[in-house]
Length: 229
Image (cartoon, rainbow, N blue to C red; front, side, top):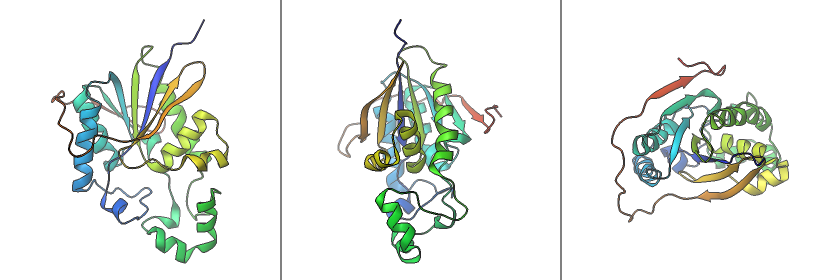
């Protein structure tokens, strides 16, 4: 018998001022910029009528504000999972891409080539995948067949998740690149996992607003052990 297929949408948060500055955020809790707030509202409109059954979010405010927009428009419940937080990038946090290239030229070249750089105090992509991918799958499999789950997280975490779920090698992972702000990848998850779309964007600025549910959805917080608080 064919296993029921569910849809998993991996969506990167809307823009922050640090994104505009090409400054790496890591675990820093940087809020959305004015542009990011508008992006979040538009992506919320876009997901208003897509049958979203559940929204998961990183606890970091840039992801949570984006997730709240989707949950509010769709009427889906929102769960906050620490497992979806951004990669801890150690001593690279708060530096611009240009500053990293200047201070850590060897590691920067490794990073640009697809190899994992040495970042003092940081996490590996494998450890990030170990915490994030199982959390998303566990939540997905609580939903009815055919349902859609939207997981709102961060560029590094989402690439690690996507690579793990698709069984990609480090070289293939590098070819995927990082999701842009308020862009997403969609997976069809059944007996196997298929990539349906990748790095898809939100509504353009001139698009009209789609009416959505203006009510607030219930929010549940989950610790790394998976217990609600």
